Length: 246
Image (cartoon, rainbow, N blue to C red; front, top):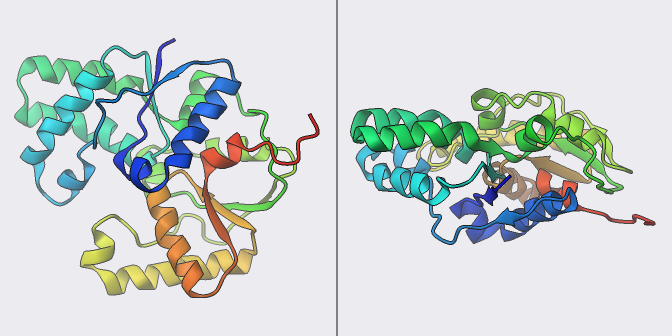
């Protein structure tokens, strides 16, 4: 199976360790991962702010870059949701038939990281060791767009030494929403306050999620309140072998 990492522009710029963690986990499971240098943004920023036609060159580039791969794996539920839900819709409206077909053939091979582990590789125990108290925040795209369900919980439950703590209101949005946090800052701040209060009450050492964008938002709120709770992408926990006697 030819596997490609779609790291996303957000992770590549701000959280490159997450992409490296995905590769470490997959290599630990015996797979080789390619990183196509031609990859860029999936167009989510353009799409969400109404610049639909400006997103089309990025849709075409994504389709061309990853066309030859059997699986495209990304550590971003929001970008996976963009590709799977919105690339076909954009292509149907603005693209010629050839690109429409290319997008339609590629989209079923695009996976969020936890989906790929559980649904394609059929594994939950990836050999991780992480002896800390951890809470998981299901981001809106992972929860409502991709419907990841219990996949992240199953993977975290198999991590040796990890104490998985439930949030009180896990399905509540953190208030990030990309440009929503800037255009509706008061509402976003109120939503963030509810989410950080839930995290602080749960008392984890680490809060994890499938989207670093939401973790950046929540982590900023936690740090401004003086909380010592760290935020860490789920992939980085699954890549960890901390304290493993082997």
